[in-house]
Length: 149
Image 1 (cartoon, rainbow, N blue to C red):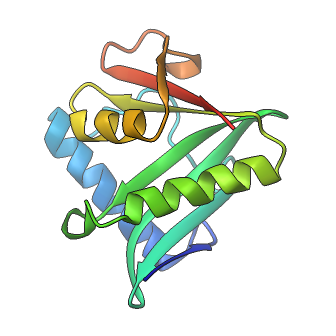
Image 2 (cartoon, rainbow, N blue to C red; image 1 turned 60 degrees about the horizontal axis):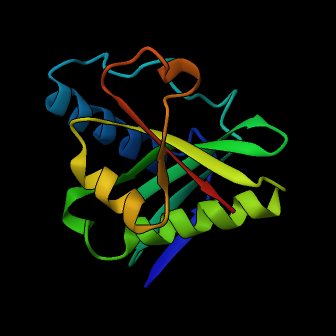
Image 3 (tube, helix red, strand yellow; image 1 turned 90 degrees about the horizontal axis):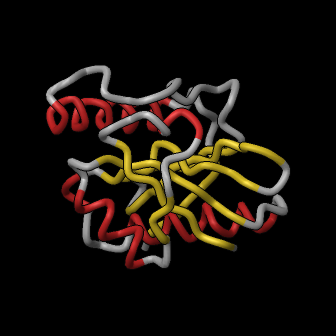
């Protein structure tokens, strides 16, 4: 069973998961600073969730509010050993539920050209590719998606 619970940005499990995500992206992009735009922080993440399976933190994701009706999905990550087991779907469903609860009518996200697994996942979950937005407009490695809630 997967439990997705709200957590403080500074939660040690969340910090560990986000560190693992950055380490994985550094390897994929061969660049420790491949993120276009500012990294999310406690100051700009509206809500952050950690997914647990059998008491172990296995994934995370958050929302960064862009305006009163839109938010961006940030730091969506599942540990490699738990991919393909429903964790990412559970996190995304919780993010969408939270978005609707907060009155957002659309979620957007940015992933990258070296993350075909993420692109397949979001497309499978009903996200459609959109032109790069915000910080990602001039980024050659960015691939952006949106979904109406």
